Image (spheres, rainbow, N blue to C red):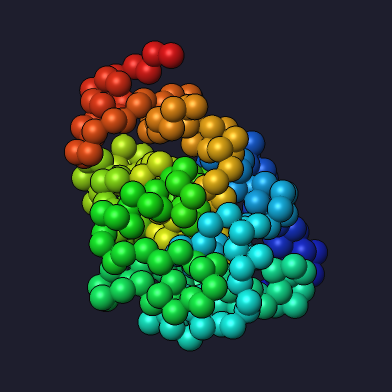
Length: 290
């Protein structure tokens, strides 16, 4: 049996240690196996980072039927009837640390999104509201859409997608759960191409003016609860819509087309699934021209 002397043992351990450090340094320098944190940060991702750092006023996702927060806060009597009536237990009560929003109902989409009671005879939360803090909306899918889509007074919120961590956007895995669960598929959430194939061309996209803000996409996102790829922001803030979603003064939304070197947008005005050529402006593999 061969035994190492203490000096030989220390020499071998030290050599292995410095070899590992050297390989790690070279990998970082050359960016081998880089994670999403090293990928280009899009405009939407910057908005998500700003939200996670506490930038701006905290956004409370209200139950369906709520108008702007000023109107809601003035009419809500904190009776919690909507909380008890919600069949999926999506509505929660804000804690005392929330200041003027304390004891007010709101939805935490990371825990449970709102299904708009589309599978029931009425929208229970606004049906039981005694003060008109929640406007009563007929339980018709198209009426709900017209009253609650982006830019409308009853819109709940708009989605912002963090493409740094969305599985198909940064090439980790195929996913389309947000598209599958969206009550207005091919309106609010769109997946073009084959969503089973891992490629940004098959990744989800959201259209602010076609989204009611129910939060189901946030709820179903497979990432950890505090790191969901989809976040909801105030859909009534038109300046935010223009800045982060590309909406013009007329309310036209744009689809963000992805390329590692640059991002460009294309208008979408129809209701059918867009083709790859419409998304990219050229056939797959073509060159992007600003």
